[in-house]
Image 1 (cartoon, rainbow, N blue to C red):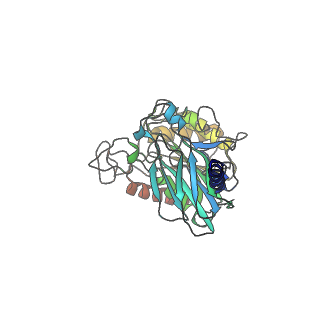
Image 2 (cartoon, helix red, strand yellow):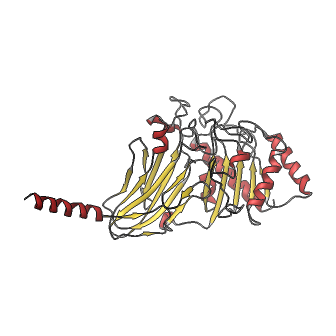
Image 3 (cartoon, rainbow, N blue to C red):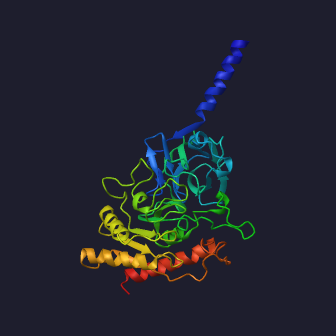
Amino acid sequence: MPHRIIAILSALLAVATACAARVTVDDPGIQYSPYNWFRSGSQFAQTPNPGAYLKLGFTGTSLSVDFDVSPFTKANVLSAQYPVIRYSIDGGPATTVQMKPLTRTIECAKGLAAGSHSLLLQYVAGYVFLDFWAPVNVVRVTGFSIDDGAKSAAPFGPNEPLKRHALFLGDSITNGDDDICTFTGGVTNAVDTQDATIGYPSVVAAATHAEYGVVAYGGASWGSNAADGHTPGLMTFWNMIDQEHPRLVDGKFSPVPEDVYVNMGENRPPRREDVPKLLNSLMAATGPNTHIFIIVPFSGRAREQIKQGMTMYYEGIGRRIERVYLIDLGDNPYLPVGRPTMFSVDGQHPLASLHAQLGAQIVAERARLLAGK
């Protein structure tokens, strides 16, 4: 009898083991948001940037995503400071989840109709004071489980990969900090006050039909550290995913973006030499069809220093070129310094409704500049 029981248990274990197929993070069917993921072969893919996302097509009826939260557990991070992610299947209703110390697997789909499906997974929020640079504050994906006999595929339908690419470099405003605050709760800097997936970059990317990478850190400036006390300023992080991993491949962004947007200066202005130095670097790391937009912060801060830097850049090359533009929307009336409005809880960080307006204004100004008007 014991032998029969062992045989039955072994058979059940074999069936359980065979019920899922494995998709590794280097699978060609996965579409990662550009410029903000590091991949360690087939072991894991990780991003320190809220606003990052990935897309994957698959067949079958179910899908689970496996995660590694060891960077948080090793650093003894409080549960309340773990990242928030969101997932949806086939463009349907989204589910938002905060990761926890025991998070290993999140079941994203079960009991689907047999056939082809597509996943969108987004990094929604990361605690602003937690190290993005070592990095500790990362979403680390280790793989996917789908039905036995099912296959991965390129994402399709609402998640079909787009041919254009855009990069957004900036600070807390660019990564959507405090864009879903409430006036009663105020600005707490907790992860439940950030949604980096609905900031102005998503509006601009959607209007210009581009896959996009958000690379932005709360408290950052051109030359000074971000609020986490570890991540350096824009002049360093523009070409580094973290302290060890370069963002460039053979000196270039990969893929080469059609658009690069730089929105920095709300926290501290640049030195005059910062602007031309960054522009020269971005010109070298992109291609002849890339447009680079330097955005004056929406509050109007650092306007004069940025304009002086742009002038210095043009004087240095002895001419004006069509690839580099200044976007100045003027001082936003909904961001009075230090005074809350219905569009901002603290008079500095736009709420989602204001992000939508600012994104639309950037799209319109981009079109005007490219038309030469």
